[in-house]
Amino acid sequence: MPEYLAPGVYVEEIEIGAKPIEGVSTSTAGFVGMAEKGPIDKPVLITSWGQFVETFGRYTSESPYLAPAVFGFFTNGGSRCFVVRVKNEAQDGDYVGADNGPGNRTGLQAFKEIDEINIVCVPGVTSEVVQQAMITHCEGLKDRFCILDPEREADLDAVQAQKEKVVSERGYAALYFPWFKAAIETTETQNNTTKVKLIQDYVPPSGYVAGIYARTDMERGVHKAPANEIIRGALELKVSLTKGEQEILNPKGINCLRAFPGRGIRVWGARTTASDALWKYVNVRRLFLYLEESIEEGTQWVVFEPNDEKLWARVKQSITEFLYRVWKDGALMGTTPEEAFFVKCDRTTMTQDDIDNGRLICLIGVAPVKPAEFVIFRIAQWTGGSEISE
Image (tube, helix red, strand yellow):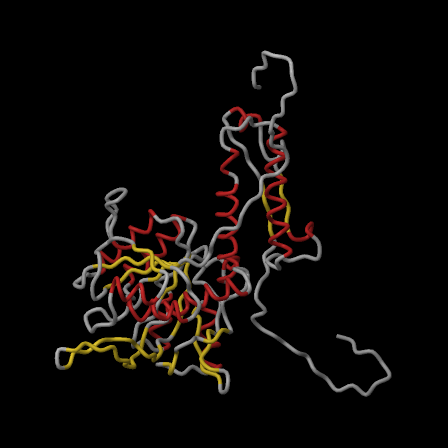
C-alpha cells in the first residue's frame, strides 16, 4: 500500500478481474535450405518474394528447392517467414545443424531462438535423418508443426515406406504427396546482360502447402483443416492419383494432392503422421498449439503472484473469456460454452503440497471441431404418406 502522510483525497489504480489473453500468430514459417547467396546459418525475416530474391537470390541448379518453396509460400497466402541458408555442399547434418548455445546455433537448430515460428519446412530434403530431426524439433518446443516432403521420384510404395519412418506419435508432422510442376524464376546471362526468366520443373509441395496453411488461418482460422484448397501455381502433378489409390494412402496418414477436372489441383488430405488417433487431424494439432501458446503467453503475469483463491479466480476468468472467444469463432464443438470447454482452478486441481511448493495447477478441457472428411448423403426413393425411418 502507498504511504500517506498528509490529509487529502488520493486516487489509486488497481487491477481486478480477468486479464485478456491475446491469440498468438499461427502462420509464420521457417525454411532451411541452400540458396544462391546470402548469410549462412543466420535466420533472416522475409516478408515478400522480392525481399527473398534481394537477400538470397533465385533458383539455381546448385540450390534448387529453397527459392521455389518460398515463392510458393508467398503465392499461396503466406506473409512472413524466417529463412536459414545452409552451405551449398551441405549434407544431412548443417540441415539438422548444431546447437552451440544462443547465437551459435546452425541449420534447423537456429529456429530454437525464434518463438514466432509456427510451421517448419526443409524443402526437398527427404532423408530420414533430417525429417526425424524436424519432428524432434517440433515435439521438443511444442509450439510448431512441420510439413514433410516425399521423395521426388516416389511412387505409392515408396511414400508408404517413407511415412513409416516419420511417425510423430502426437501429430506434430504431416506428409504430402506428390511433387508437382510449377513455374520457377531463375536468371540467365547473355551478352553481359542478366535477365530473369521462367522455367518449369517439378517442386516439392512443402512451401506451397505452408502458404495454404497461412491462407486458411487468415480466412477461416487455425481450426479449419487446410484442405480442399487450390494450390496456386501448381501446373501438373508428378503422379496422378485416383480415388482408389488415395483410399490406400489416406488411412495411413499420407495427404494426397489431386487434380480435379474444372477445379484445379488441390490439397485433398488433412491428416498428420500421428500414431495416436486423437491427433490424426492437422487442424486439431495446430488448434492445440495455438491454444497452448496463447494461454502460456497470456498468463505470464501470474508468476510470483500470491497463490490464493483470488488469483485462482482471476486465472480461471482470463482463460474462460479467451476460450469463449475461440468457441464463438467456431473452433470448438458444442451449442453452448459449457459443451465446448471447461476450466478448473481451485482446491480440486491443487493439493496443499502443490500450494506449499509454489504450484498453481489449472485443468482445461476443450472439444475441438474435426473436419468433415467423409461426407455421406443417404438418398432413397420416397412414395410419400409416411415418414422415413433410418
